[in-house]
Image 1 (cartoon, rainbow, N blue to C red):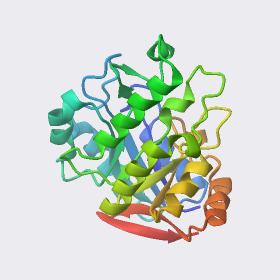
Image 2 (image 1 turned 90 degrees about the horizontal axis):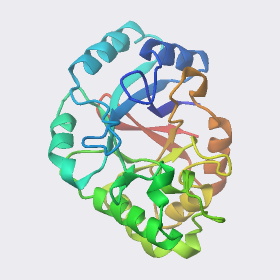
Image 3 (image 1 turned 120 degrees about the vertical axis):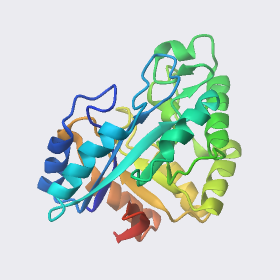
Image 4 (image 1 turned 90 degrees about the vertical axis):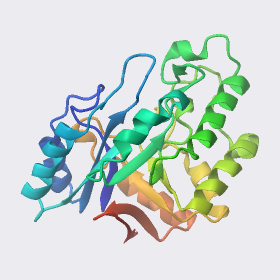
Length: 263
């Protein structure tokens, strides 16, 4: 195991984790790198805004980065939740030069967070997923910098449908334009192991294989851990899946540059 590229600390509204505890756990499990990517969701309809100012966040992580420099590389990142009306606010935060790594994610689409049950009220699966995938595709065109696309298929985590699985054959008309744009722009696909009980990852191994088949080679291992015990969760299995698909390396950002770690 090499790098965990998506973790949350007390700077996120849905985590109480101490940043130092997260780093120490990453060292314990043998990682070479941990990336803190606390939430930035300007104008989140449920009020889960996350970071609105990066100053204290950067100060805290920079001190820890220096303290543990001999043991692990601490990368300072953000997970920015795309919302069309909040692009200017996100752009301001993304401009902080101390932020090394940015994940472009979609949590909110159609006016509410698709993690919430009420998001699906009155929506068929077709309608709900259409809106979600359209938002993901739109998010790829934001004017601020980002390095990776987070948890593609996020809507599946809480979808109430009898069979809410995103089968590639059924959704390739939405997924292929997303994958092709990412490949063309050299954006990293996140393999996020924090999925629902019925899933191994977001996106699923089936969708990761489809991305690879279209020429995608940039993939990052991400636990989306909100507590120390979830750091690098299921990474051994994730690495096996990636090797079986054909990947020979995983990506991370280090010292401001994309780095490849061999599988």
